[in-house]
Image (cartoon, rainbow, N blue to C red):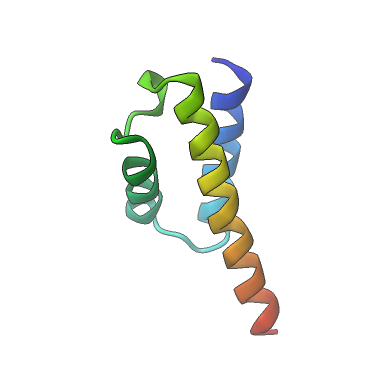
Length: 68
């Protein structure tokens, strides 16, 4: 497993901790890469996915901070 796949796995776990449901994460992955299986995507798609997941994590954190 390369570093980007490890990062994707970490980001997916963070999203779950922030309250996202697995189907929502799968939807982001499929929308970004065209596949739900991240093991089969190219390096450039992995980077695009990392960017997308980081965006959604940032969004959730901003929402959580706003609600406190």
